[in-house]
Amino acid sequence: MNRFLKGHVIRNIIKRPVRSVGLAALVMLLSFSVFSGTLVIASMRNGLGSLKDRLGADIMVVPYEATTKSNLENIILQGNTGYFYMDSSYLKKIASIEGIGQISAQFYLASTSSGCCSVPVEIIGFDPDTDFTIQPWIKQSYHKELKELDVVVGNDLNAFVGDTLTFYGVDVHVAAKLDKTGTNLDTAVYTNESTIKRLIQSSLDKKMNNFADIDPDKVVSCIMINVAEGYTIEEVLNDINIHVRKVEAIKTKNMISGISRSLSGVSDVIGILVIVVWILALVIMIIAFTVSSMERKKEFAVLRAIGASRGRLAGLVMGEGITISLIGSLVGIVLGTLLILPFSNFLEEAFELPFLLPKITIILLAALMSAVISLVAGSLACIIASYRISRIDTGLILREGN
Amino acid sequence: MKKLCNIVTLILSLILSVGVMTFADACHNKMMGKWMHCHYVQMDVFYIGIGLIVVSLPALFIKNEKIALISAFVQMALAVVAILLPGTIMDMCMMHTMRCYSVMKPFVTVMGILVIISALAGEIVNLLGGKQQK
Image 1 (cartoon, helix red, strand yellow):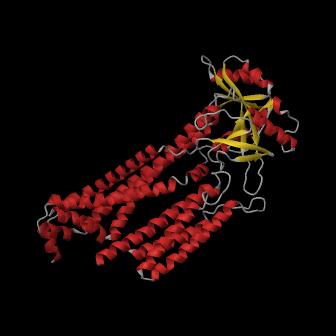
Image 2 (cartoon, one colour):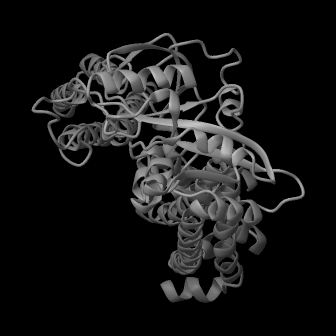
Image 3 (cartoon, one colour):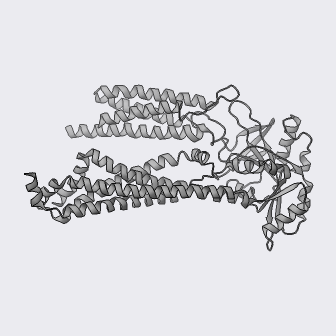
């Protein structure tokens, strides 16, 4: 009898394809929404964490014009290309202020779009002796020191180790490709101070630089600062803004606060949607399982008449429900994987938020969690149907048929 | 069931061909009067999609098992080429955040995988059906 019931579960699913596919589609919707929602929220949180790590300084000091044109956030956070310069004497002036722990200058330059398929990229230069923001990141993928005309490229650039890139007529060598951050920092090129100064000089020689009268050896674009222990960021920030003219000190946390707010908004919306889909799917599944089981009262009555116990009948309904739920949840997870993983760059562009896929272990965990949630929802929906089926009056139903 | 798989493969091939020319195209505009590399990748994927449609059609009407088998293998081979074309066989744009990488390539990959699964499923069903008949 047991073997008969097991076979009956599979036969019932195959022989009623419309009902089975409909119920599996409901579970698939539930599992897809839970899996893809979890993955999207996790990727956004991962991206924001990655952005916080990469900015890596408490304070950024830029020329006042840069902040009034809202250039800075566009360049750092939106991936726009642009550059600005201030006199390098500001570096010494700011370094002498009390409360400065680490200080390093950075240099910006935008490449030109040349040829049919190249686009302008942001080139960021750093001082290898003092830098504390870019080098720790580079060290994750490249352990040697960058030589003259060596560059390191962001993960989203279609350039690879050993390639030669040309900026303003200067050939540079790609020494390493950085790990993905899921932010617009992935589309920039990084190099040391001497190389970027050479590129700036070349852009000036070719009259392709907006700042025609600068001396590359006497300018910097931005000063990155970490506050010393015992001082607060606000103290040092105010000190710079009060005592150093024509520059603006910005708290990097404030720069990403807008992103944090957007992220929190998107997370809330996705979370609510997942809960709504979960409740809707559960209610529809309960109705669908109950209605489809009640339509088969006569079939169950016959099974009772040939010796199947009430428990066996309940088991049959539960078996069908769990098998359908398992198939539906697996299809939902596969669908979520096919839509979220390959389209991660598109989602980053669409949400306009940092988007970094979590590690494979986290993805597998999310898949497992979604499968369990869908199976639990499917089982819950079956319990009511199987209880009602186990209570049917065999004699009455068989007589009704006559 | 085998016929259903053939119909699914045909629909997927149609979506692939129409998709790369419309909602999942590589670039919207010509840059500096020229098409970018990715446009030619898009056109090649489109021709592969047309090839897939042409190969899928006879499988719907001809019942010869050998022809069905060859057709399934050709479909799978074309799908693999379509998956490998953007970025692997042919170069595309500079940044992975550009449309060819963020939309066209994943779209072609997903559709290619689905075509392979569909063609493979059709052949497995066909083989199992053949064995049962014997």
